[in-house]
Amino acid sequence: MGKKETKDKKPAQFKKIYELLSKYSQVIIVGLANVGSKQVQDIRRILAKRNALLVIGKNTLFKKVLSTRVQDLPESHEYYDELKKFGGAIRELDVLKNQVAGKVGFIFTDTPVFDLKTVIEENKVETPARVGAVAPIDVVIPPGPTGMDPASIQFFHALQIPTKIEKGQIQITKDFVVLKTGQKVGQSQAVLLQKLGKKPFLYGMEVLACYDNGSILNKQQVSVNLNDIVTKFQKNVSNISAISLANGWVNEASAPYLLANAFKDLAAIGLQSGFIFDQIKQSNAPAQTSAPVVAKVEEKQAQQAPAKVEEPEEDVDMGGLFD
Image (cartoon, rainbow, N blue to C red):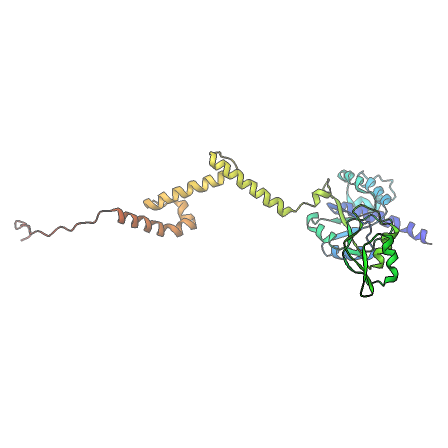
């Protein structure tokens, strides 16, 4: 019965993936190693609120859909009537086939991967160290009480862990490295961490790559912070502008500053001479500062001008002109 149900689901899954590949411009590939079903459900709900859909299925099915979607659909295809409405072949999707490997899931969305990456990867769960798992981090037990009675001391001695008995319980006396990054978890390490109640690993989905309108962004590229890029770009433009202005070079970076400086010079001359041209009238900043500038110029001229000496009045004989 189970096999029949799975068989019946395949056509529906095929059509759904075909539709999603037609509808969305972006496919985010996420790693699902050590991710539990509860985590998958949680992240699905979060992504749905951001207009993104997580699909997890067999890689063979996904590859089959991809190989169909990059070609024009023949009329003889079993789903031709249902799939022809999604248009012609999307050949750019061919670059996605190499990403379908291992335990992965696919997030279909039009939201930029840079906006979703944090949301996808922040949902992590503490997990015990299971035998055979590869340690993603160093695992170190710090000094302190273990909460275990002295009867278990032989277990610690067998692992060469420095201990002492204090207040009726075993106490570790200095840092003990249980696992190093990349090391496989053995039986003794797993038992030790279990006895101490430690869940040393945090597991969650990881963004591995992203298909975006025909291009593949790798893991390093999707980890770039866009704000950092904008800040660095602005800083470099400022540096180019400064160098260009200092050397008298006219280019796209320096031209706005050269024009602005030239206008300021003309505006200053116009305000000082009383010649107010149209561009000054249209500009709020010079208009607002014109009165203080003129007043300052007049004040400076008054300070520099020699004091006027008043001459005494003289009686002049007008010769009866107005008599």
